[in-house]
Image (cartoon, rainbow over all chains, first blue to last red; front, top):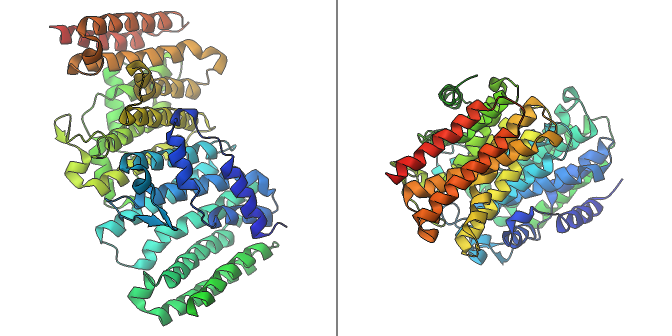
Length: 260
Length: 260
């Protein structure tokens, strides 16, 4: 089985070589700037590792894994815009609209979403595309709640804005291997819990979000209980899920780091 | 065979009853405002009429026809934004960002594109979705050329920004009927010419675009030659294309109107 780092290397290479539509012209550069943000590629790694754990060839999932990263990137580019979160920096680099202007950022975000579906449509059957569409509508709905301040509960927001795409990362792997829907539940719940954990850890590292609302001790407790639920879901699956357990371990290690 | 008005009535009813993802919450209202702009629904009508002309049941194409209208609507909402064309009015109503704010306009445009793919993924096989993705990348590339002023030729821009989605409207109908790709060429060229004609007529009615660049007489000549090519393509098809010829006639009648 490949390690998370091996999956990461594969997806980086796949993204670097990804052919975008010719007609995007020089917008291609903006799209690639958005994609090359130096993120940890956690969603595509989750997709590839799920595919292998479920008994498939992770290379067959590279297109879906890349599509998920494109959807993630689309959401960052649009959410960073002045009319939304108005963020000027992301991972130490100027955000897309700061670097290229708002018009290009809007179009590059559109192109990222569209190219994600083009990749998904490379698969037989509609399942990969439907996973993307479902996750994306959740993310858009979550962002809408967020900017309108009509959000009741940050955890509900996290489930829409973050956990949905993690669940889709797992779901795409399952469809590619051909796991029937009746056997998907524990996998999917693992994906969603993993996504919630990712966001909780992110808030702990940034001293933001849940930490501001509930305090650090309560957020640490939430991280621990979410980690436990994610591990429980994995344990219920009759497959070698050791690499996925390793991904949970990577996240949990970051919690320790945040507490130093 | 149904008339253009009968197709129009069906698509209006379908769009009015269209179920959007629950999770969009109150963004649903913004999406519906964008969709209910009182346009002529020319692209979906073209899709439905092509389906029937090619020997299929137009009701089976309603999802694809609606998806095309959603893509069109997505492009209008984003192109109207202050960072792009900065339009405050569209068909006598405030544009989406004027009515609801920029953030909601960006998210509503994203939701329209995503819901379009969700509709396309309701069909067996990837063809309807691929038509949308191809047309959308052309439209985004065209809009990019437009705002960057790097456009060499307005006709090339029209082919990307307008004609692509008209060709896709025809293409979706052909796939739904099951017309093999080897027999699609004349149909597709008709769709692209029809799209070019649509834009030329639009410029004649608005005294804009081509009319400003080339003058009215040259643009009228262009309309006549494009109309002739569109009719030629239809004549080459071995099917009852009378309703499609009627759609060309509707556009041509608007040219007369513009010359009064």
